[in-house]
Amino acid sequence: MDYTVIGDSVNIAQRLQSVAGHGQIIISEYSYEKIKESFNCKRVGEVVLKNKSKPLVIYEVID
Image (cartoon, rainbow, N blue to C red; front, top):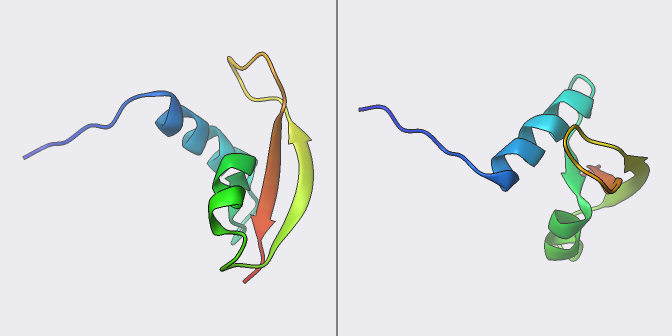
């Protein structure tokens, strides 16, 4: 069987993946708010992603 996922979340995830360096985990501010009590994260800054009108605040998951 073959499966496909589509939608805005998938597109953002792919674009965040392209921003991340080797071995780096980059997440959106939305994801950060969900996990901040369980993981140490560092605010990286804002990035402008393809087909997005507003910059997105991103975080790096440290541990």
